[in-house]
Length: 374
Image (tube, rainbow, N blue to C red):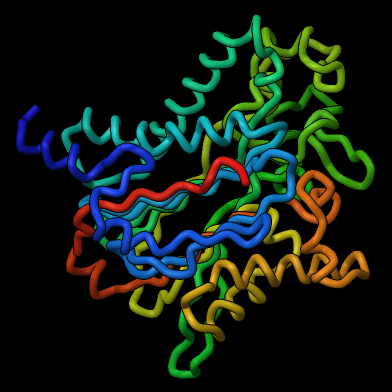
């Protein structure tokens, strides 16, 4: 491999958590905390401005997110963990690095859908190996998993890859009306969607219990709502579906094939001049806001604080559903808060087409990830 190329890529892909210098720290925007809410009102990436916010509801924050921007372009990741934080943290530590490794192996700096697919596969294999390694000391890690929503902007193309039910929504300007339309870019994998149940039944024609309606919610094997994830290895490998994992996760029937998949749905979207902004968010946001509502909130308000504004709108709706005031919901502590809403992660990216078309480089590169816990 050519040394100049190696030097270029090594410069672009900084380790997690490092701000290269004061310029990088300035681009990141100031991190602020307000109770269980952590946010960055505004910052700069090679593709435009961004806003970011995370609110915790669980005892330990299960959502994770990350942003990387450098010579190759921009990477966004939202990881909605379930069963604990182990898998989402592992993915936040390794998925981007695995994408880096794929590009290094190919001596390329241009990303393809196949590269992203391979990075997901390596991450799934790595977590499965970790579960196997820890089986004798921490077997319950086998029951943790995470939804994964990834966006990559490279050479005027946006790739969106998704496992689970996080969601990416595009705000697109409509002619000269001043309005913005909401366009969902991600495909979701939740058993409450009829097409997902149909897919599961076609994959498991001899299993009448592949999807079960339980307490008004469709679940795979009556246990988990999403049909695709990283982790949840107890639903993918028979050797992990046994004692000593919790009895509620153990299935009596043999596992002839995995019940869940780690194969992401990936779309490639050539960016258009009227594509205004992107909203990447975990399911916690979309439980309370529609695509149209979220896009209208971003469109009708200043850029700074956009992500925080979306989180607060979702919390206000969660409070309204429980016939309580937002100020009272705000006072409820983590763990108890989970009875009212889930962890919520939001990244809003305002697209700068001039920077994108020129292949502008953020130098030094920027790396941000959400705090592990409040």
